[in-house]
Amino acid sequence: MDIVMVGAGNLATHLACALYEQGYRIRQVYSRTKESASLLASQVEADYTNQVEKLCPLAAIYICALKDDVLPTLIPQLTAVNPNALWLHTAGSIPMDVWEGHVERYGVIYPLQTFSKHRKVDFKQIPIFIEVKHEGDLGTLDYMAHRLTDKVYRVSSEGRKRLHLAAVFACNFTNHMYALTQELLDDYGLPFDVMLPLIDETTQKVHRLSPKQAQTGPAARGDKKVMDAHRKMLADKPQLECIYQLLSDSIEKMKQ
Amino acid sequence: MDIVMVGAGNLATHLACALYEQGYRIRQVYSRTKESASLLASQVEADYTNQVEKLCPLAAIYICALKDDVLPTLIPQLTAVNPNALWLHTAGSIPMDVWEGHVERYGVIYPLQTFSKHRKVDFKQIPIFIEVKHEGDLGTLDYMAHRLTDKVYRVSSEGRKRLHLAAVFACNFTNHMYALTQELLDDYGLPFDVMLPLIDETTQKVHRLSPKQAQTGPAARGDKKVMDAHRKMLADKPQLECIYQLLSDSIEKMKQ
Image (cartoon, rainbow over all chains, first blue to last red; front, side, top):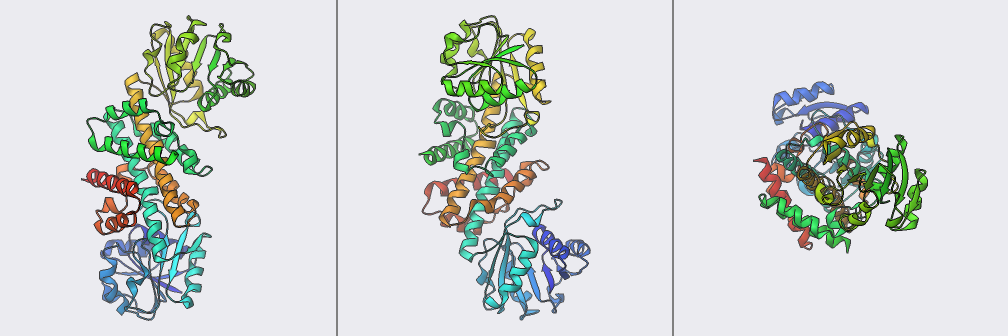
């Protein structure tokens, strides 16, 4: 089963490397820029191109890991190269039917993880959510996903969109809490590093307890005195004060 | 240096056990309830009491790890037992001068961590912030803190209050993001466990990158289309929608 990887960003890179390590042949890598196409291609013994019209027409599977706003605009050109292949995208918030009308065999492979350029991830630990138009292609997609991880789930486009929303809270907003923490510490001349043991333990806790059970802090205790003092300390940062208030209210409400 | 531990909650338990393991003699444990006093006492070969007037008057150091609203009310009674000893509290948001007028020698030992009942923590990884009224007591306190961890910092009451506020963002609010994630997943019949690899990686990232550098997601990309779709999905949860909007705005602002 030869694969063409369309895209050479973080997700494309990690996915292509993991598939390559599992014995899949990556025939070609496409990217808008020659540099990133060739960089990934060299890691997985593939050819590369930065021109859609030079896309290899002979692969069995095309995996498109492109930016959310780029994918829909490129689909007509891409699929014209090999309309009989299995076409997959990797986006949480793009429905499967984005392929509709362009090809017959299509689906989605969505690994739920945040990928960084210089950080190796262990795919075995990553849940992969798959969706496929024709049941006839389920075997191929399911087998591929299972080569990468034991945690393979079938999920609809609607379910995937909801997973993606939940992931914004679990990952993007959590990271923003760290960024706000750093902002506060910077102001006080304290290094962010002092928070890492606390951050690690907070994460470890939800491996054993539900987040509701693990909740601590002034809002969870209903400690108005501390919350008032904290809000006063944020008086010169209205947006932070507003976030403090809203999240404290939300914690108190959840406790009830 | 004999110690009396006043309190038998999570922090008191972890601190007493760590000091005991480092060779400190815990003479006595006080708690409002006999059960919790005796439970901790048995772990550190100490006597116990649930009556303030039976507090041992012979210790060199009294460590008060009580609830924030309880400590100030108990100080007069507690300190009367041994006004010449070194009295320490462990609270992030209570200033050192809460002891003023009751005893001469006092200070604070504040370990920056979230403690759970049934979870052993490695004190070596925990930053401890100390403050002391008389320089003459600095050696005793600094030595004790260094027995527990290499990361000992001197910090003023003001600095400690600010650390505590920052910790609310890093720990309590982060945990609440997980709780909101669970709420969303529950609605969709998806298990919280599928998020753990993503949560772990999000945490790992800020060990290498600053949180600002590590920020990803629709708000960081300025992806209005996805954000609009997400807000629509939250239309029946006004508080969640409000949190989504506020945090997305805050991320966008920080990117600028």
